[in-house]
Image (cartoon, rainbow, N blue to C red; front, side, top):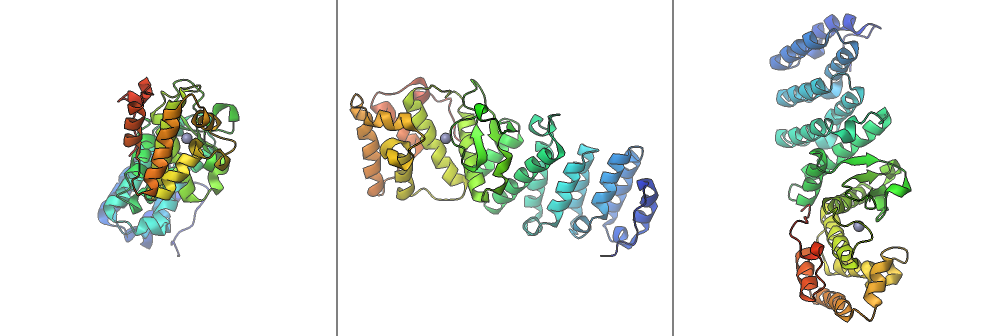
Length: 340
Ligand SMILES: [Zn+2]
């Protein structure tokens, strides 16, 4: 598309050209007025000014033809000032087909998610490079779009809300020492840091199939919400904690809980140690330990129930654990929570 103007080295020189361009004149009068108002606010700051110009002259911004959303994007960018990464992500967002397919309400939610997340320590930490910030915002963008496409998926939305609100911080790391648990999808919960609520994401998770990313993010966020479980925890705490995290992970990626899934979880969590030979070892040991026959019976019963079509959810599993008198403060506690 011919923009009707070209850029000089000094962005200020481009502003008259921008305002005189056909592209600019096609914008709604309210959007034009807001751009001019914001220009007056940032004209002394060359980086913030460049951000404003680059957004307004982008085809994706102009082609939105939705003045409410354009005003919201201007506001979000204005909140970020000189942040080039944020501008690049919202310019890219405005051009995405799945974003454009959304109605105003869903578009607003995605912008709000990005705008709010960008105020959190997870994003503003000084150690983050521009690449790190791009990585994080892209994850928020994709998760928010995923959530918008499946409005009945409460797990995905609640997971995102916990992260965007700052309740559960996320941090990029490749330090294995900080993490344990479930490295699938390159995401782990910092469970060996007492009191930690942080979810760690390894940047190599970038190549992960997106639903796997969502599943693992929901799973690990569930652990983070229940950070009372710090290794070495009571083994039944760990079992319940993993069982519920597995369930919310699958629900978060949009799958329904099925008998096959319940049996898969039970197998992984000790019913069949060959299924996961290198993880959940203590759960498999506990299942096989003859000193705890009630626990083995509980697992076997849940397995049989699944075959008959009765799926034991996390709340029911908790009740059954209490019933066999293996209730620990975590198992009987009401202060642990699910992101569902
Ligand atoms: Zn887990």
